[in-house]
Length: 258
Image (cartoon, rainbow, N blue to C red; front, side, top):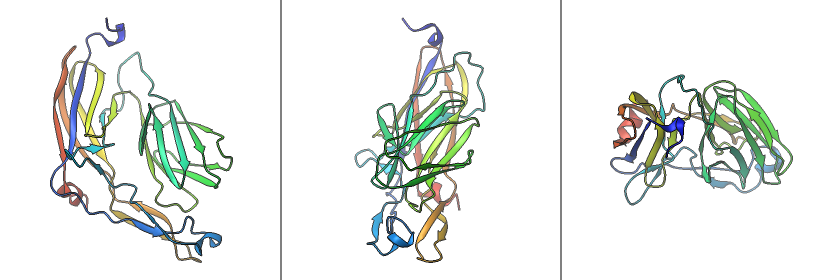
C-alpha cells in the first residue's frame, strides 16, 4: 500500500533526445592553473563542460533536467532531495547525489550541500546566478557545508582558474524534478493530479565571454550563452503514469539562442 502522502498522485515519464547530427564541440587547452607558477607547465586538453552527453545508441541526452515549472506548491509534505556532495578531484568538479555523479544536482530550498576537495590542490568554489558566494577548499577531505536560502539556478565554477570545471545546482521549492539517465529517460513521481507546466533544461556550450590573465595570457574564466530550455504541459491523473512525453533538442534550438 502506498504511504498516505502518495495517495491520489500520479507520475510523469518520458525521454529527452537529440535530433539530427551530433554537434561538433571543441575543447580547450591550458595549464592546470593560469597562475605564474603553473603557466610554464604543459598545456593540457580540457573538454567543454557544457557539452551534451548524447547516447550513441538511441540519441538520449543524459543529465538533461526536467522540473515542474512553478515557483511554489501547496504540498504540506515536502520531501528533501538526496544529500549532495560537490566534489573537486583530478581537476574536475562533479555533483554526487543519490548514487549518481553528474554535472547537475537538486536541493530543496533551505537544505544544505557539502563541498569537499579530494585532491592536494587548493580550490576556491564560486557560486553565481541565484546565489553569490565563494568557498575556499584548502583542507583535503574536509567538507564545507552551505545552506541555500534562495530558489533558482546556481552555477558553480572555480575562482582559481580552472575554467573547464563547472556544475549546476537547482534550488527548488518542491521535489518535482529529475535528471535523465543514460538513455534520456526520466520519471517524476508523486505529482498532484491536474494539468501542470514543465521545463526541460540543458546547458549551452557556446562561449560568450573569456577572461585572460594579464601576466600569463591564459584563460582564467569562461562564460557561456544562456541555457537551452523547452516547455510542455501534461495532465496528471491519480495513480497513473503519463508516459507519452518525448522531447527533442537539435542544433536549431541552439542557434535560436543567438
